[in-house]
Structure formats: C-alpha cells, structure tokens
Length: 405
Image (cartoon, rainbow, N blue to C red; front, side):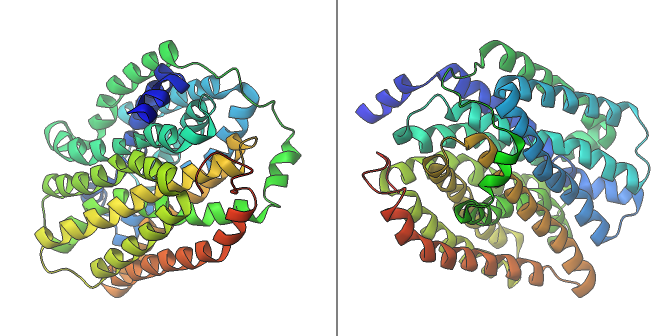
C-alpha cells in the first residue's frame, strides 16, 4: 500500500486524470471510421482494399502528426498544444457532420482530419510524465495511456448510433463528449514546472542518430501498431469473416479493445516492478502466438473472440511496458521521443489495417496479413534480446536510475 499512496502524492493527479480523459475521447474519434466502415462501404460501394485503406488513413495521419505535435509540446508546452489539437478535431467533426461525404476521396480527407485526434498521444503522455519521478513513470504513463480505451467506445456505440441516426450524424453526436473533455482539460490540466527547455529543430534530428530511438520505435510499432490496427479492423473482420451484423461485430471488437486498453496501466505497473524488458519479452511471445492462431482462421466467432482478446491483452500490456522504458532512456527528450515512438506505433497500425484489406482482396483471406504481423512480433522479441544486456549495463544500470529495467 505504501507504493500506491506514495504514487498519488508524487505528482499532480488532476493533470493525470484530465490527460487520460482527453486522450480517451480523442482515441474514440481517431478510430471512428473502423466501426462505421461496414455501413459507409455499403453506401459508397467500396472494395475490401478501399475499406482497409479508409480505416487505416487516420492511423497514418495520426502517426505523422505526432511529430508535429511533439514539436509543439516542447515549444508551446503540452497544455496549449493539446488545446490547439482539440479545436482542430472539433472543427473537422463539424465539417464531417454538416458537409457532403458521398465519395471515397471525401472519406480519406476526413481520415486525415481525424488523424489530429490520434496525435493526442504526443500531448497526454508528456503532460502527465513530467509531473512524476523515474520510479513512477510506468504507472503514470500507464494510467494516462489507458486512454486507448476510447477506441472501445467507438466500437461499442458507433454502429448502433449509425443505424438509429445515420452514420454521418454520428460525427455530430461525437461533438458532445468532445466538448465536455475540452472543458475538463482546460480547467484541470496544468503544465509541470519541471519541463525541459525547448530545443532547436536540429536537436530533434539528433535523437534519430541514437540507435536506441530506432529500437523503441520498432518495438512500439509492433505493440501499439497491433493494438490500433486491430481496433480499426476487427469490426470489418468479424462482419466479413463470420457474417456478424455491424452492431454485433462492434460489440466483439469493443471486448477485444477494452481488454487491450485497460491492461495498459497494468503493463506500466508490472514493468515498474519486474522491469520493462522482461515484461515486454513475455508479451511479444504471447502476442505472436495468438496472432498466428488467428491467422489459421478460427472456425466460429465465439472461438475467435478469446483468441483476439488474448492477443490484445498482450499488445496492450506491451504498450505500457515500452513507455516504462522510454522516459528512463530519453528523459530530457521525452516530448520528441513520445512523438517519434508514437509515430512509429501509428505507422504499424496503418500497415496492419491496410494490409488486412489488401490481403483479403488479393488472396480472399486475412491469413497472410495476420501471419506477417505475428512474424513482426517475433522479430521484435529477437531485437529486444539483442539489446537487453547493453541497456541493463548502461543507462538502465542501478547506478543510473532507481527504476527497474
């Protein structure tokens, strides 16, 4: 109990919870096209590949915009950068609600605007992280990062709201919770006084000269890429593979996404206790195994559901573990590293979501797309095994940090 109470006294709880709430609703909007894709593609007559690219576009846009937001976080401070992003998303949703979305191109444009919501990651994590000491980074970033659960709300409510009100009106209905989140954020979130000074643009490029930055980007492209790619694609998968209705497919997706997002804080807590490397290694093994089982084509949706849930549990826990390690290695560059690592995660999600669509269109099956991603989890495990000794004897040694690596 002592550790828990010291955690709640160590930082700024209103900022931590406001970060989580803002992140949660931003992620709900970010993946909104996935749960609506069945109805949208029916109205617009999209192919499997177009459907896959449509739901993947916000993931790629969000990934690239995380760098922009990461720079803004360091120069304007996290709170102001987050406020700007939220206002852009609200304006984009208003356009989607009141505008004309009758073509594939207009859906891709909307996907780019929704990408700004995905960049919330680069605000929420530094906003929370800067308030907490090294030994509580995993827990703090796990709680802030549990905003991943917003993707489950999209899967849970969007398909049934689309049936009741029409899918275009869902974008208007989203303005209500986003408005509430904006007010909560503006009232309760505060920038940490311990923020590092802003860096010149060239210094952001310097981080990329460090090979550890590339390792973290790769590791997160698998854990978060798997999580976000599946969150965007599973409604389509359950609908196409098993003939489930959009609403039922949304419920199945929500169960998987809740599993993956709610354990993110657990991933941070476990990593604080036993070390991020050990936690991450185990999670890659579990994720690879269950993604491979899924690729074999489970016969019924009732059996497929637990397979995807376990895969998402592993990926979600891995997300928390990666961000227990990043602040230990790049504490002074946490703003830009959150942007870079987050960008890699979004690119991983874009790859998975789009490759599933192309896999279905070209081969008639999702097997190839899922098999390749399972193989990437194995590659990440091998990469982690290659660097762990060096990490534990340099920046992760007991002489350098109080945190477990």
